[in-house]
Image 1 (cartoon, chains in turn green, brown):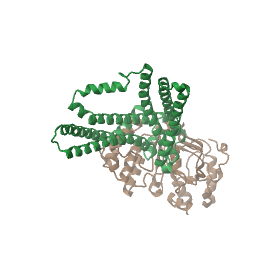
Image 2: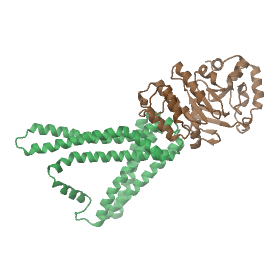
Image 3: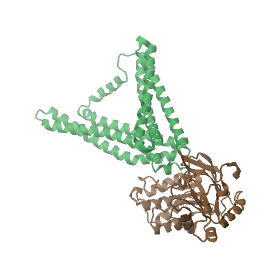
Image 4: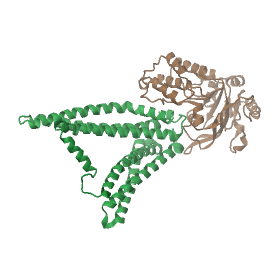
Length: 272
Length: 289
């Protein structure tokens, strides 16, 4: 049943998300072309200055559009979760002969997959629009870009093994941060829809801020405690500790949100 | 089933008309005051024989015991009990706010009750009961972005008892093509499609909440025919509606709900024999404002 639920949820979201991705792709290619030709203008001493300005303006708009499309796709994934459970569609969803845990897990997984996919597509489109023209114009820059990425990961920098480990853990922590953020948003949607039935949207936003504030508070507290433990030596070792704490806390927050959602949907949720 | 375990149920006030076997029924029925003494005596004698499970080896499809549900101070269901045997079409009737939809939603598994129990073919409300119950809500629950064909796929995927051929036949009769998007259909057609999906299941219990309220009189006949044709002798149907005269001819029995309690149960034949009235006429009398 889990597979069937995921299949239908993925298909539902794809109907809105795929056209968004196609538009993002087209915009990024257009932006890429514009930037590429702008490089041409700038080398030509007789280039028309206005053309460069206009092209740059459109390029900027294109980049904003790519970002907006990414956010909208993520929003669509969340709104599908909301619609399938808390609107009239819930009359069908909640009479399916499946356990609540299966139902919720399927919705959660499909939401995650589409949000992650939206982020990847947006990132890919941004890279196409930002870097591809530069690389096309000067292929030697590919090597420099690789060096940059390595440097971001701490390679080539005069840092210790602990600092490098902290850096890598921070990057892993970002993945867990993303997961816990999605969990928090979904929990806020569930709580807002179940508790504040008459003002669902306000309820969802309110609960998101409250839960997020609590989660950030806990993570911040962990960072302060690390600082207190290491005192003046708060440097590389503390960085590593904070990174580990952050991962553990994001996992704990995600688990807590999962069980809160499950409990509400299983025991407290009434379609009225 | 034993009534004595429900202490505050006022069994004596129930009006029972005709030879309907709904197990034992419990509720307050203040409206019974308008019924003649003759009927009340008939009810009392019949209640004595209605203390057990349906006789003759007939399985009960639905058993409800002292069911209660409140929304804050408002008691939507106030201790109702009855049993529905297989092979019956029961009209669940009552004015707005009488608890019909709340009752149906509890049986469908959309609402949790505050007290009491409900079982469908011996299963409490849960995954098993949901696989046996086909529920038609009063509003369109099929996702609007689906096509009719995708809606069929959806039902076929999740309900093992869904008969795809039957669904396609009925849709063809209604001239609804599979490529149509749900959101492009009219309100009436959406209701028909939803009814087709529900009645294409070979369920044990059909819960139809206002199935004919949004469609034209000609379509109502089609819907009622669909209900009669598609339900098996081992199944039962509960229809909640305000359009009593339209479904009266197909009902085996009726239950009047008033303020969350059973006001009256009976059969159309029994009512006609005892009072010379149709269910519609009697409803208007009992629930006159």
